[in-house]
Length: 231
Picture (cartoon, rainbow, N blue to C red):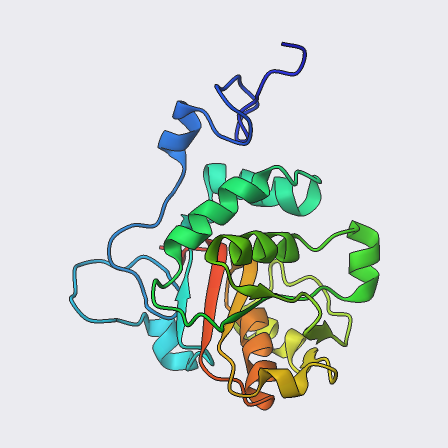
C-alpha cells in the first residue's frame, strides 16, 4: 500500500512488481517472424532455413548464432537506458526472461555465459556492468555457468554513439582480450556472450575474436535490444 508496484516502462500502477502495464506491453517492439540467424535483426518474408542479412554476409560475424528479443526503440529503449544509466536493476528479471526466450534452444549444457566487459574506469564510474547483471540472470535461468571475469577491456575506448560502422570497429579493435587466468578453461568450450544492445556488432565481434584466440568452441550472442537499420 505504501509502495505499490509500478510499471517499468511508464511508472503507472501494475498488479505485481517488476512488470509492465498492458499499454506499455502493447507498445513494446518485440522482434518476431523471420530474423537474421547471426544478428537477430528482423527480415522480410519467410524461410524454413537459416538466413543472414546483408551486413552479416559482408562482415562475416565471428560467432555462430545471434538473437535479440527487442528492437531498440520506444519502450525497449527506455528500459535499456534505465538499466544502463538509471540504476534500475529491477528491469533485469523481466529483460532476462525475454532474452532467454530468444536464445537458441539447443545450446550445449557446458556453455559458459559471459558479459561484454567494461573498462575499469567506466565500471568504477557506473558502479556496475549492466551486461553482467543480464548475463548472470540469463545463466541462472538456463542453468549454465556464469563468469564475469573471463574477458577484459584492456583499453579505454571512446563512446561509440554516432560513429559509423567502420569507426566503431576501428575503435574497439584490440581493446578486449581474454584474462590469462581463464584462457585454458575456454579451450573447446561453447560461449554465450551477453550485451544490452547491438548496433553494428563491433564490440561483440571484438569479444568473440578474443574468445576464438583462446580456442573456444561455438559462440552464441544474445542481446536485449537490436538497433534496426535505417529505412
